[in-house]
Image (cartoon, rainbow, N blue to C red; front, side):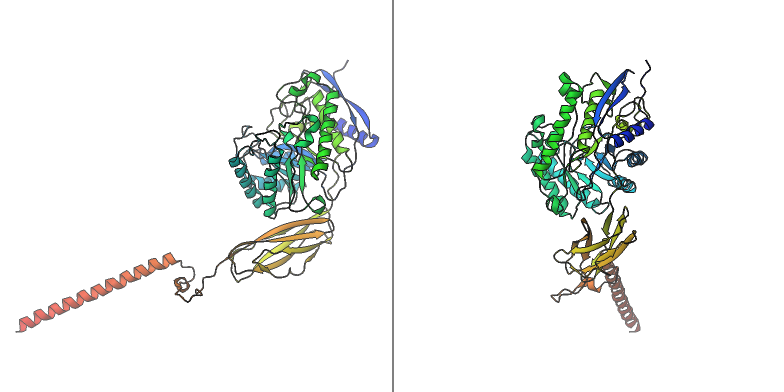
Amino acid sequence: MTDAQPLNRRSLAFVLLVLSIAGPIFVPLNIPDSTGKAVTISHHLNLAPASTSGSVPVLIGWGGVGLGETLSDIQTEMQTLNQSGYNTVRVAFEPTCTIPPDGNILGRYDATKLSQVIGLAKQYGLWVIVDYHGYTELETSSSKQCWLGFWQSLVANFTSSYSQIIWEGLNEPHMTSNTDVAGLSSAYQALINEVRALGDTHWIVVQSMCSASCGFSDSNMAAGYPMVTDPLGNLSQGGRIFISLHSYMGYQWYSSSWNNATADFLAHEFLNAVVTGMKTTGWPALNTEGGTSTGSQVPPDEVLSGSSGYSVVSFHFAQTLTNLYDGNSPQRINWVWWTAGSWTNTPGAGTLGSLQCNSHPIGWGCLLAFTPVGPPAADFTIFASSPITANTGQSATSTITAASLYGFTGAVSLTERVPSGLTCGSISPGNRLDLGTGGSVSATISCNTTDTGNHTLTITGTSGSLVHSTTATFNFQGNASQPSGGGLCLSCLLPKGMTMYVWLVALGALIGLVSTIALLHVRARLQLAAARRRARSLNQ
């Protein structure tokens, strides 16, 4: 008997080719476990083509990419995803409003670093999920308010940076009561409302309570989804909310029946929960985490240890769930598996974690059969610049730029939503930008006001079913002019560039100089008078 060899990339490519031709089949995979003993995993694969829905993007990918990793490692991970048929990366950072439970292994939030990472995602055409990897933010009012304030600041900084950003407000939310779905719903609604109030239209993920530790049974996991609305409207009206349920098969919970039959049953329980959740909430699913982790206890069939490891049964569970999600109709269920970070403690995982195909045994992501995502649909982006600060009564101009993505060659119609107090002219040279040859096209809009402060103008670009929005902030300051009441305006008399403080200092110095000259003049006159009196007395 010969020893079983790990499935290499060439063999994997052949298997995937066979799958794409043959459809539903049983594939036996011989995988050596951590002791070198060969074990056989046999799983049924029924792969469906990716959805072509225009309203909800098809998203598959990997998470666990930590913001604390080096940019070169993150770039390697994104490049691997791009070349392997994935289109989504989940970038995580440790919570800022509670004590990080993971020892800062994912890295702290860094706005500059996140901007660079978003730039890499844009370079590789990936959707990027921004994951606040926290747990207990909603257990106290103070941490909840901190959490909402943090997200308001973050979103304000990145609203116009990239159209393919997805906000994931909280990794796995815990509540003081593990059945408090109403409280969870209220917290997420507050987050959604504040994000939309900023003019942001990116997709937002709301996480099921059962992604962490809910008080519902496996057969009733759908009860853990928060119920929320989107100010943008429902799904058909342009609302952009994803529901999410994290899916694992922990050995500590299923040790008494740790086998493939249990894995199959549990995978179907997760599928049923997601399908039911989509119906009850009215929102599509993007399950932002799941995979082969077996929890705090090590199963007897472990193949590879560590945070990106797997066992025979846990891989069977992940593969079955992937098949069910990929084959769901009419909408393929989106998924992002865990983990592809460079921080894992799995032997030989290196930079790619579960996607490491050069380790022995190889990572489970190299064994996973799935339907790759096809080329992205043609689309466009839109961006509006925020002009420099202007005086009230003067005009400020924003430049609006529409750019082609993935071969888009249509026309984009522009409309503006002008806030109260701001007056804007027409978009010039017109509100229709023709991207007939691809590339980018620009237009301008000028606005003025008599009110000081910031004014946010929203520009929306529409081409058929494609709708994207952006904002431009106009800031106006008051003019230095004579008060309407007729009083003396000292500041109006100042030379340009001189502040009142500088003017007063200069005036004080001038007064001092004049006073000194006057005193010297008086002293000189007194001395002259005294001299004349002495002269007269001598002449007598």
